[in-house]
Image (cartoon, rainbow, N blue to C red):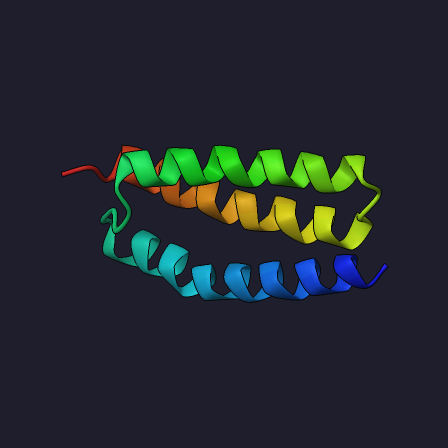
Length: 83
């Protein structure tokens, strides 16, 4: 399905963009994302991944879960390193 490819590529780009943000948070021991932003985006990304799974979009599901997990790490950083 072409939609699976398009969604996968877009989510891959989003996940790739988050990697430096996650690494910077761990290096600086500082939260760079607001708690509310991290929580809502994490929940939304996992919900979208479940929707992809229910539609049989395997690649979108896999990269969506990875993307959601990156957001989960940012959310955890915002809890641990809050100012």
